[in-house]
Image (tube, rainbow, N blue to C red; front, side, top):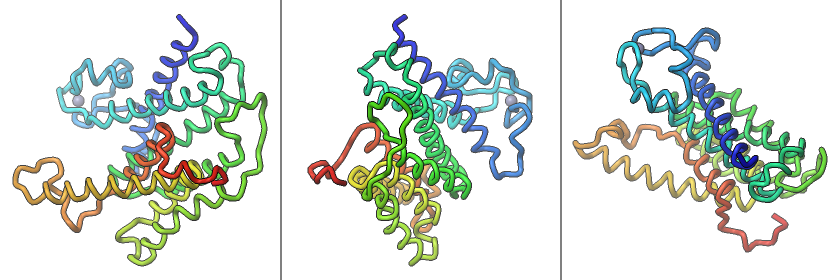
Length: 286
Ligand SMILES: [Zn+2]
């Protein structure tokens, strides 16, 4: 098989395995349940065998049910696994395109590119964890926020997406450095004014990290997109909550808090992986 194709399949598979770990982390972290111990069925408590735990595939072949008690398995499992796989693929493609698309052989012998891939995959897996945790628990854990802020700040010193032959550390220029605080400041103000009710403090730290990850123009694009998408979804949820037919979204009303981190992350995905930039005509200084 062509090395490039092998690397694509490998990166998706590896990402799915990391996604599986993120699922366990999102169910167990800060909930009093330790990270140790084998995975069990949530309904019957049966210890799950390796064949039940193959990312995505187990869910598909068992049709979303437990093999022992037929209980429904949360679709969160295959979804997060799949998303992690796609993130892993997206990062591999971004960095391998530096070497020439699908030129697996050239990519294999570039340790610095491997390091960058691993580093940015860790960043995106942390983002995915924050999104899943925010959706599940309506809160962003401080430890995850601070880890992400440290990683994205550190990324400023890596020359991302540049074809560098060896390990090198760059001194970040002013605007990328300021992008984080500048983009987070409106969210920070909203949190401050509302005492954290309209916008959680976790969202501000999250946006600080996304600003450092994306830079000023792409970061501003991502922030605007997430507000637009968030507003559209919020209005749709409120409208559907007034109708008796609403099922999944029925519990959302004016007062209920809609987690904002998923929208911020969605905007960031569009800017980072799909290169959406509303301000690309601005000088490249930013
Ligand atoms: Zn079961």
